[in-house]
Length: 360
Ligand code: PEP
Ligand code: MN
Image (cartoon, rainbow, N blue to C red; front, side, top):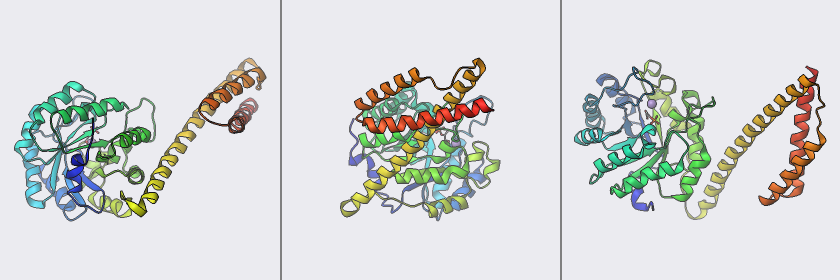
């Protein structure tokens, strides 16, 4: 698959000096709610107004969206505020209705991207239209599945494409609702440099306090835009209450963000440097996470050794492990000196921690 300049024309045509902002509530709830949020976003940097009409909820019995009725409210938003409108579609009926109501931008939700059958149905229904279609990443970190969805849309002749990074679900509890796995997105960017990429910090974080920092990371990585869930009374929202911000906070977030533009010529160096530094920051954080897990495993061994009363330092095991690390390090182009220093430090820290387990 090839993503060309043509695929990002819809974005370039906006001629923005800042990342494109898509904002609005997680779900359309009432006509009044939809219109009042839209009016508060009217004279801001927001270009597209989002609202979910059909909501894919994890469990039945939760609020599943107002359905087609909400499309009339979105059309009023467009008439009254001039904002362009966006909603999630998950089957051919949604697409037919969204087209009838002049929705400008359609996005495919994370739970749909995982299913090639759904994506094919969507692609077939979109064939011959000129809608902007943004594909959210699948819930699981599978780059091929994400790219596969783009390929199906391309084969249906959809030209105005883009992706939304909304994080990946994990079994493990983390500070995020859906972990960003930035390295996967960086890979997508390097394979398709022209592909418009939007970050959805609302679904990544699950909490409004973290939205700023995730948005900043996205801009450091040269994302083209942000989709941020916005509600006049977030705590009372019918879905995703904890992650929605007020229109006032949204404006503040946009003011505080440092914008890194794609640049050419003399600024290209600075821009690449920033991007590489942002990657390094992310990798360093991952290193710390791995070190934490490594220490927890060795604490656990410490406890086991105490229970059966064996010595902490097991020389044979350590020498073998170090030998193995030197060998693997060599294969990865890492010097013996570095590997030895690094693993001696890690090993020493493990011993210190196990000793403190023995003392306590
Ligand atoms: C949404 O944007 O409200 C939504 C349901 O998102 P996701 O598909 O990322 O869960
Ligand atoms: Mn939501």
